[in-house]
Length: 221
Ligand SMILES: CCCCC[C@H]1O[C@@H](O)C[C@@H]1SC[C@H](NC(=O)CC[C@H](N)C(=O)O)C(=O)NCC(=O)O
Image 1 (cartoon, protein in one colour):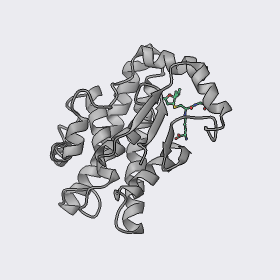
Image 2: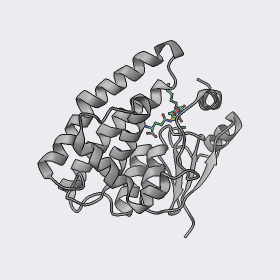
Image 3: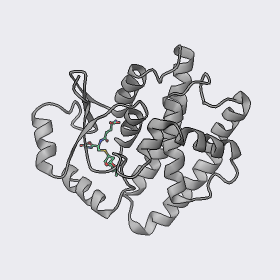
């Protein structure tokens, strides 16, 4: 079968969680990087962007947009979405939470430089007071290796992605969360994820000024 094809900027943004999920599932994918306004306008003109937005993923003969719809499809397709509806809704709760945290980090790249320090401080505080305590408690209460049903799922993949992104902002952010530290080590050592964390994988670096410029020029905002 043809490999899934991802259309997005050469950066993390909203596409990075899709890259993580595919990589963790051991699924190879291709990428087309948006560098110019013309590329974006062609995708629009060709009617491939439902609401005129990317991420765009072509998979199984479908042209998919809307990040969460794509992630839900992939999680279900690769059996990373729980054994029943009650596990699936928990996975949705947890991934909505980590998605909210990562959206704060994503948007911070587009804020004025003078607000950078303040934004980072706010994100780290939210991670330490709102998000990480919740996951530490879940791991403590369940005393298991994974967040849901003691089976590896999309929720585990996305929590690791979020932990690593916050650690890029503050390396000691897990100092008060011993179970999350152990979780990070455990999930990072899952072979497909270990490979994705190696240099040379399709994982993208933190956003820089070039990335922001390309996004602004392409989307004209
Ligand atoms: C200040 C905000 C900057 C974010 C801009 C983009 O850069 C990325 O890092 C994040 C977004 S992604 C690009 C943006 N896509 C979305 O907002 C998708 C939202 C959708 N709900 C999803 O989850 O996929 C885009 O195509 N916009 C065109 C435009 O709406 O006309």
